[in-house]
Length: 452
Image (cartoon, rainbow, N blue to C red; front, side, top):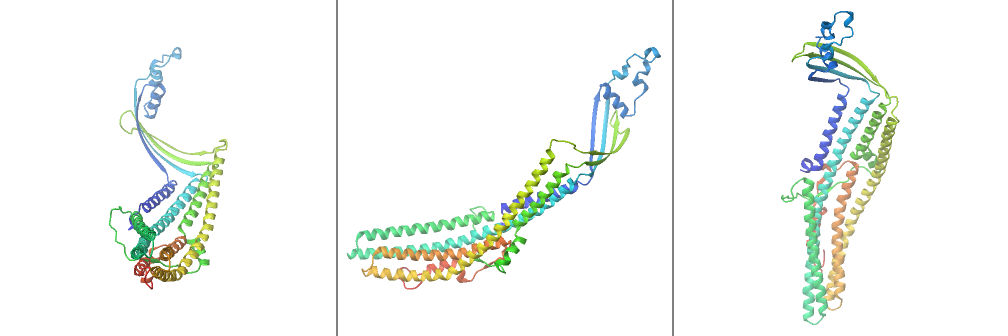
């Protein structure tokens, strides 16, 4: 659902559409440019009026004042028709085609830049899709982790309530002092607060899931089974090479570098002459029509001889931009290798912690049971009981975090490799999920029980 309607992904797809349009635009630059122009004018300006008549093929000797010529003596007479023409109308049309013949590499640079930007946008879309998978996974697993914390908090509340009951009974027997009861009640309220905070964590994770899927927060979402991220095939040594070849963000940076090279070619093209050809047909008529026709063909060479260094500075700027992208790419490649190694080590560390955390829960539960019995028999103190219970709560929470950390670090590893897809997520067996961890926590005994 997120891959269909997440706004970030829609934005990435819009960038691809822009890049495709840029490629088409760059390709079209090699084709002739044809323009059609239609105009109408009315004037009594001497030069313009005579020019219109010439274009209309209607100029006569009378326009030069032939009717006022009476011999050599009239050579000094200013012709009225030429100098003070009547209002003249002209309806003109023009069809012109221009074709670039040589651009100094500008069109080739534009095409290289546009194609590279399209590939960069496509790589960016692939990266966006995988980041969306990561966001959904983080929120989805976060809901189950929060529910597991709620299970831990529920056990803490249960144990704290049991302590209050025990202390109250002992107080009535005169075995303990009133401050012990107050301390137990404070512990109970603190456990209830932690339970409320765990509920808020679940709500927060569920809100994040709605946002990642592009859904309104008010819409009900039923979660499927918990999932586990599998380790990719291979070893850390081979993963780095795979990541450099397949990580979409690295691919996008490489394509941006190619686009920067195209921009350098575009900037350098201004150092060379620009040659183009044109063909044109014009018509002119005193009324609406196409009476008189004229045709023009030609070619033009333009070369900027001196511009004060503007073009050179533009080239230097484009080259510096390319160097910047080269440095960014090298840095990203170096960081990618470090990220892969770090994610793998942390995932393995979390995996190795699971057994330790499970044993810690068992040990803490047994310790809490023994200390509670000692306190009930008047041997221990309430401080010892609460310390043991706090240690048990922490052990349970650490177990939940270790399970969540395995998924998140494996997801980070797959994301770095460019392999975070739905194929890498599977429903997990009963003993390996945060949800089952919560169930196991709820099955844990209180501080007076024997075994976890």
